[in-house]
Length: 367
Image 1: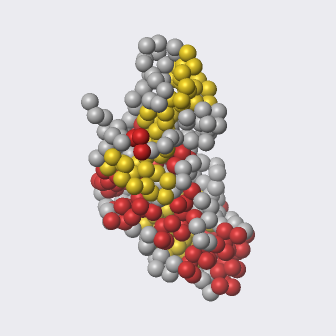
Image 2: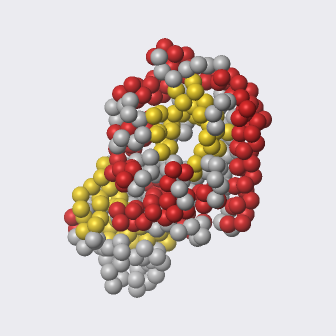
Image 3: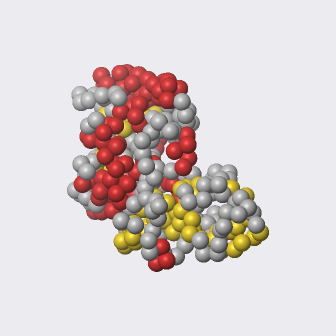
């Protein structure tokens, strides 16, 4: 039986390698559009894919607004002609100048960023003023992630400060709820509603200060279907584009398909119950404890030790593993795994069909 992930001419691909399946990417995009109900309410995060070609697929599917985490990701989006690019980060130090360079060199794209601190807002404003730029900004709210964002109780003060800075144009609120991990959909709904209530409360408090409606950008992939049922916010899923084993296990209620894998080969037979493959720390995201990858064609394999270039697997006696055997793995966390590879092999109809550069894995493209 030919499984969907099998590559007929896999001998053309050295391992370890990242491989992507465009047909399944298309499927995931269509599923996201169906969940959102209105494509204009989608603002996907591109931190997962980091590839121009994937962003172009989303653009052709009617998605026009995007979120990113680095200046390089922002420039990658500008290179595709993306019209609306939110840097979901408060620029500090050289990042301010780099963002202003993007604004100058890519005038067809509208850039915006986050702010959560009055002092830093002032620093960004001074550079914008010097360059004659008016920059759209979103107030970043801490809704429980405790990573970035101003406490909701202090957001009104920041909003008033922004109104005194003519080269910053507040356009909305941003609330990322990446702290919500509940597998049970009802519990996830409860926690997402609690986080969103903070955003909604701030919006109601500060909206009278503005003569135009404020936008709200909320959530990530786990809470995407919940926020999609609201009518007054944009949703920012990211991992949906490729999916991974961690989310597949954690959120079985979500319909997305694996669209990116890592392939590796058995390079040594340790003994009757252990083999070694060429998938080390440098080839799959290593921030989680073992297992960090699940093998579709060897699901009974248990990772027991990993080094920079090696992964030792425990397999049942009699499994029949052999040197050179190709294994197809789903990473537990796809986002940082993608960043480990310079390119991804594109698989169409079971065959290698070129490659896509992971251009935004680099911190710098041109600016």
